[in-house]
Amino acid sequence: MSWKNLLAIRTVQAHTTSDTEIKELRNLVSRDLKDAAITGLSADRRFATAYNAVLQLSKMAIACAGYRIATGVGHHQKTFEAVKLALGAPSEKLADYFEVCRRKRNFIDYDHAEVVTEGEADELLEKAQEFQDLVEEWIADNYPAFKA
Image (cartoon, rainbow, N blue to C red; front, side, top):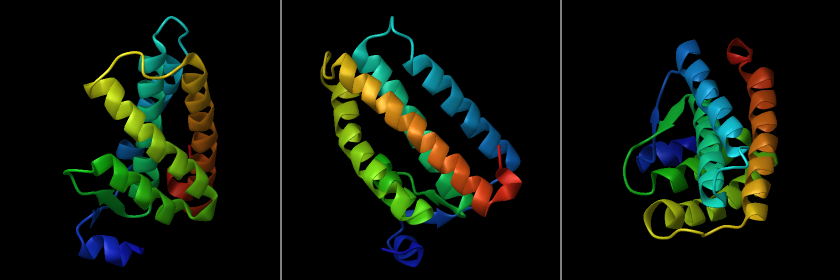
C-alpha cells in the first residue's frame, strides 16, 4: 500500500499540520501515558488510556507525513495501517500489536468489563512508551521543525 493508494480509496486525506496541532497531540499523549500509569485505575481503563496515547502518537506521525485519516468506520484500524507507511519497517511489529489491542479496547469501551489483566495493561503502557520514543525520533530525523 502507498499514500497514493490510500488517497485513491479515501482512507487518508492530504493534510498540512502545524506546531499547534503537534503540540496538542503531544499534550494528549503525555496526559494519557501518565494516567495509564495510575495503579488505582482498573486494568481496563489503564489499557484503554494507553491505547489512546498510541492512537494520538500515530496521528502525529501521519500528520507530519502530510496526511490525516478520513473519518468513518474503521478509523482506528486505518490509522494503524497508515502509520506503518509513515514510520516504515521499524513500526510494523508495534502497529500489528496495537491492532490486536484495538480489538480488546473495543470490548472494553463498548461491550464488557474486566477484559484485560494488569499484565496486559502494563505491557501496552510499556509498548506505548516504546512507540513514543520511535515516533519522536522519527519526527526529529524527518521533520525537525516539529521536534519536541
